[in-house]
Length: 323
Image (cartoon, rainbow, N blue to C red; front, side, top):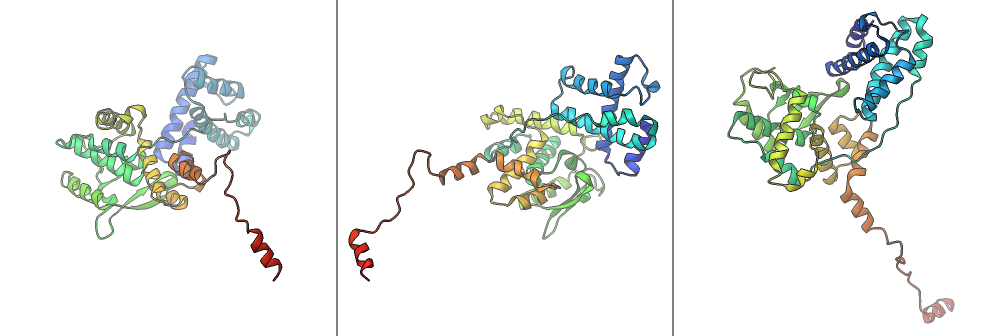
């Protein structure tokens, strides 16, 4: 049934390849765990074998044995729920088992503040690649574009040469999460870097904007590694970077915080980042310590009396009473 489920995801749900790959990874882990727990080969397992006890044990195994976070556990659970919801219409005889699996609750997670780079840290990171090499020039553009546009790492790696439109109003087009298309305007210095980079790429419009030496698009893992490498190199320019875990998503957070500090409202930031729900953008308000400081400056201290109201003198009161 898993092959039918995959075909259904791609055909009916238009699921992106990254999501399908994550689902496949979840089932690889589940079937490996199920074989160890039951002694049944993965190809011989039935829905009846994948009951709530086994699925619950698998989710617990992810946390205790694999060291996954509660958020990762919930993501794996979401993939399993999608499959069992699909199975409920194809295997009505197993509805009791399916219902028990679907009833497994998500685990509560802690809400942590987003990590972002200050202006000095961002400048140091962008300056870290050695622009005397082809790879260094590619990496510098990738870091710059990631911070200026706030693209997700999957959006960055899927950019093609023809995703960029250079002209009086230069812009970038991308297909984001949920297959939403959005257009992001580009700053002049970004356009200059792009024009220089186009001269180093093959004249293939549908070629990747950030290729490897072999001409294939960079992978998510490769972007993560190059960001970690350049962050370590940038510590010499900006020591505060040593205290931060800089990931591809940090570039996106940095873009959002720079927009917030520039006075852009959260609704506009949500459109810029491609958030489907404006509530998602509220995390940046919680992370903005400078905004909180400015708010605090406008609030009287708890032991400070508010300014006294103006009180008229007795003579003035007497004058008014006698009018």
